[in-house]
Length: 369
Image (cartoon, rainbow, N blue to C red):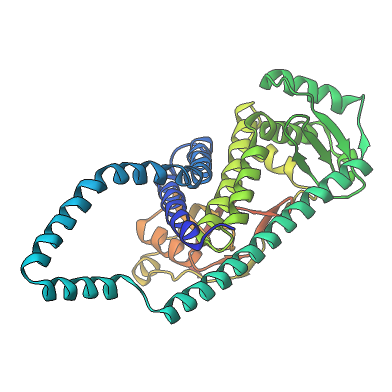
């Protein structure tokens, strides 16, 4: 079993790695989602590798200390012999003090051992549960794939072949359609699978093209491998909130990066959003409203107009990253931002996973006659 001291030391290292990556990703908010995803991916790999190196590196330091120890021990013995020759009583007292100082009490050792065993058992239980949940999810995916219909010909296959050629993919992609009305998932490494929902049969070509481009972008970027590595890391450090945060952020940046890949193919953002709707995205709904306060001085002067904002809804439904697009007056913009900042939405779900969509909001200020 892994010792508690090793687990504690590796937890500190992993926390520093993923915490730094989250900070860097936040500083790179103006960069592309692909760049932020790359930073988080590198951190995930380092967080997996560094604790493993910890098993090897300490032995090098111990060996170095062993070579330098004899001379120090010899000096200590010589001093002790000289002291013993002149005043033996003093020498005996020093030895007794040293012996009592370095040896812990028996009850302390027993308590530490009991606490260590208990913590180890709790960690093992959490690890087993986390790995069990992951295994159940993978088993369910395999079961769904086995019950899905394989698409071998038709317009969908032609679209997949075109996008695969454009992306430069060399791995064979298996296209499936399930009986589930809204399930859309991509998984696998060597023979990746794209499972389309039953509702995809009613989608127009534009919608299916965008959806396939998004899912195949995941395959090109090998997102499934990175995400599985992150899930294994989360299973080991299930008690570490920073690891949970980096795994969630990794998934979000993966979705944003694939959206960017779709948009770079020349698809308009509105078309992309419409194509991903229809059972794939659970749209946000406003649950808390706050009316803007009309500045009295502007109302008396008859200054009115429409303030247009762009904002992001985070995974909890809170409105963040508010940006003013147009405004007839700075005070109206401030009033609109202050009100919208208090709004609350239901989380937006993409295939059951919380995402952070960008929305445009219009706030109208009008002086009533």
